[in-house]
Amino acid sequence: MASASVQPAALSAEQAKVVLAEVIQAFSAPENAVRMDEARDNACNDMGKMLQFVLPVATQIQQEVIKAYGFSCDGEGVLKFARLVKSYEAQDPEIASLSGKLKALFLPPMTLPPHGPASGGSVAAS
Picture 1 (spheres, helix red, strand yellow):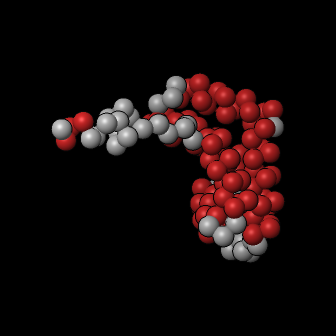
Picture 2 (cartoon, helix red, strand yellow; picture 1 turned 90 degrees about the horizontal axis):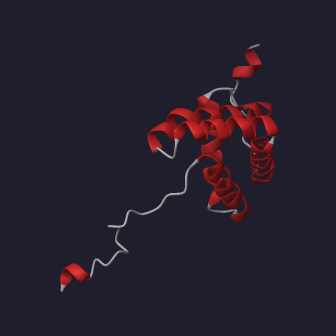
C-alpha cells in the first residue's frame, strides 16, 4: 500500500482540535485507561521509568487515533502530529488548552525543587 507512506495532509486548526479531542478521548477508553494506570504503577513517579513505561503506551494510544488522519503509525507520525499542534498553540488558545490536557495525561506534574529560585534566594544576599 504505497499511499500509506505519503505525507499527511496538513490539518487546519479546526481539524487539529478535532483530532486532539479524539486523542484525549482515547485515553479515557477503559482499555487504554487500564494500560496507562499499569504503566504509571510500573514507573513509580520516576522520570526515567516514566519514559520507559508510560511514554510508549501514550504514544501507541495516540498512533491509533492519528493514523486515521494520514499520519504514519509510528513514532515519527506522533512527532509530526505534535509539531503540527505546537505550530497552532500560539495562535489558538483552545488548541493550547487541549495540548496541555493531552500532555498532562502522560507527563507527571513538574515541581520545582526546594532550592529553586523562589525559595529565598535573597536570604543569601544578606
